[in-house]
Length: 113
Image (cartoon, rainbow, N blue to C red; front, side, top):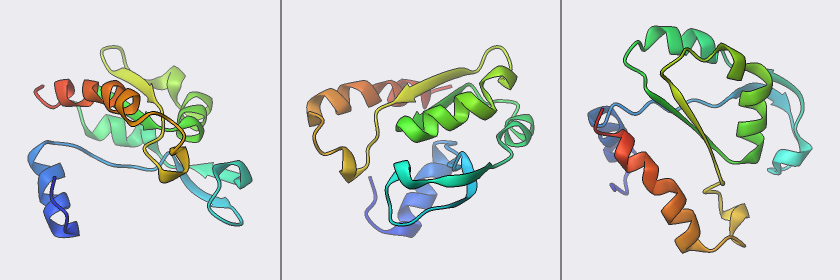
């Protein structure tokens, strides 16, 4: 995995990976997801419609997963698999790294669509 930002962008494009926050705007003091208030979702359904070859969505962490379920899960077209993953955030440092790695390995399988 590239270290520099530009290299990461190239990697994502080469692998056809799109990144998007579920929550587009909110009020939040600090960095904890639990302090999010007045959330407004991004237009994930619109994004899905723009990517007809989309086959999988990965929600990184509990808040992203909960927001995705709340706003979008009922509108995901058939054939697109949604994965609700444990967070890769440093705030999730209490989780065993090997367990987290094994859970996220499914992403590698999805890169070959």
